[in-house]
Amino acid sequence: MKEILLFYLPGCPHCKLAFQFQKELIAAHPSWESIPVRTVDESRERALADSYDYYYVPTYYVDGQKVHEGHAERSDVERVFRLAAGED
Image 1 (cartoon, helix red, strand yellow):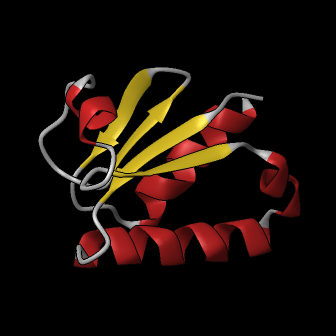
Image 2 (cartoon, rainbow, N blue to C red):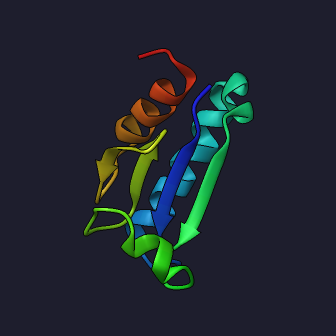
Image 3 (cartoon, one colour):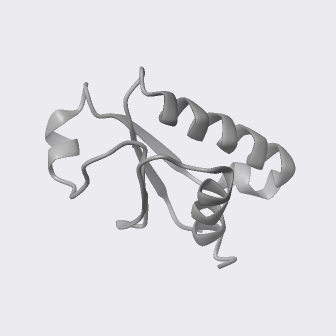
């Protein structure tokens, strides 16, 4: 199982949607609950955020590889979790 790294901003409406999609997907796929997800508030962890190559939040990395950046649909978040679970 691979680690998911998510950069977000607390006031970002797209990030709020991404978190909602995560909750829904984990409820639908209980095995995904064990996937490690590290969430990084880029406003609090600037040094870490600046060390990654992205411009928009939410941005997802799976084992260090950027797999999604910017506005996320449910299908985008599902793809992230499938990659982390080794299903895609």
